[in-house]
Image (cartoon, rainbow, N blue to C red; front, side, top):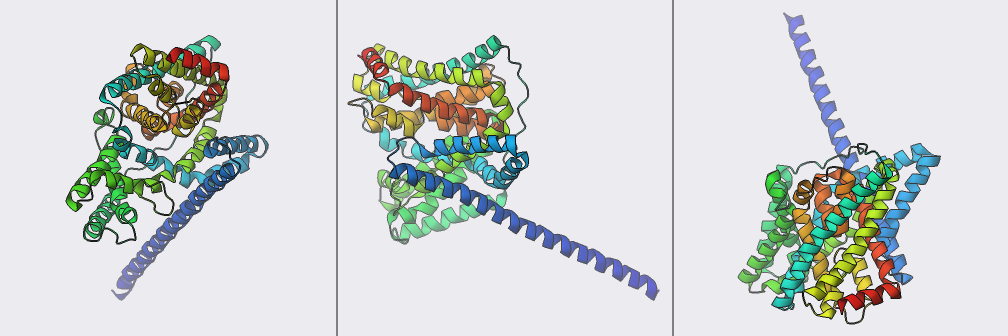
Length: 450
C-alpha cells in the first residue's frame, strides 16, 4: 500500500516539475520575444531618425525613408546573391518588427485624417464640390488605368502569373489589449478633465486618451464583418473614434473641438500630441516595406515590365487628367494646380507643387488625404468589382491611385499585395516629382489648366 502511494506521489511530483518547467520556458520565451521586438523595432526607428537628420542637414528634399527602403531592399538582394544565409538571418532578425508594423499599419496613417476638418474648413462650398468630384472620379479612373495597364502589359509580354509567396497575417486583438486601452482612455480622460495641464501642457495631457481612442477605434473596426469593412474600413472607424472623443471632450471641458485637434497634432517635437506619436512611425513603416518587397523579389523581377509601365502610365494620366477636368468643371487655376498631385504621397506632393507659383499647400495636403481616405474605404470592393484577382494588379492599382492610405488599407487584409503596393507607391511619387521638375511638362500642365 505504501509503495503504491509513493508511486502516485512520485508521478504527481514529476508532473508538477514538468508543468513548472514548461511555465518557466514560456515566460522566458515571452521575455525574449519582447526584447527581440524592442531591439529590432528600435533599430528601424533609429535608422529612420539618422536618415532623416542626414537628409535635412544636406537640404535634400527627397523623402529619406523612401531612399532607405530602396537601400535596404538592394542590400538584401545583394546579400541573397552572395551570402543567402546572411540575407535570411537579417529577415528573421527583423521579422518581429515587421509583423508589429504590419499589425498596426493603418493606424500610422490616421493622424492626417483626424485633423482633416481643420484643413478643409476654408475651402468655398462650390469649389469643394468640384474638387470632391475630381477626387472621387479621378481616384476611380486612375485605379482602372493602373490595373488594366498592368494586365495589358502582362498579356503583351506573355508573362505567366505564378502564386505570390505566402505572407503572415497579423494576429487578432486580444481582450486584454482592449481592456488595457479602455483603462488608459477612462483614466486619462478623468485626469485631463479635472486638470487639463496635469502632464505639463494640454497636448501632453490629452495625448493618452486621444491615442487610446485611435487604438480602440481601430480594434473595433477590425472586428466588423468583412462585408461591412469593404465599405467602412477600420481606418474610418479609427478616425471617427478620435474625432468624436475630441468633440465630446472639447464640449464638456469647454476647450472646443478645433483646439483639441490642435493638441492632437502639434507638429512640435517638444510638445507632441497623439498624432505626432503615430506620425513618428511613418518613416519606419516605409523602411519596413523593403522586407515585404524582398519576400516577393522573384515575383517583382518576373513582372517588372508591367509594374514599371503601369506606374508610369497611371502617374502621367493622373496629372494630366486632373488638369483637364479641373478646367472643364471651371475650377480656379490656382486650385487646380494645387490638386494636381492628388494621387502622390504627401511629402512628394508638397515637393511637386513647390514647382508651381500660386499653389496652396494646405489644399494639396487636404486633397491628398481625402484621396487616400476614399481609396482606403472603397478600394477592396472596387477591385473585386473590376475583377482584379492577383496581388500585383491589386497592389499597383491601389498604391497608384491612393498612395500610403490605400496601401495600409489593402495590405491589412491582403498582406501578399503589400510589396507591390510599396514599390508602386514609391515609384509613383518619384516619377511624378521627376516629371514635374521638367519645365516643358510644367508648361504643358499649366496650358491645360488655363
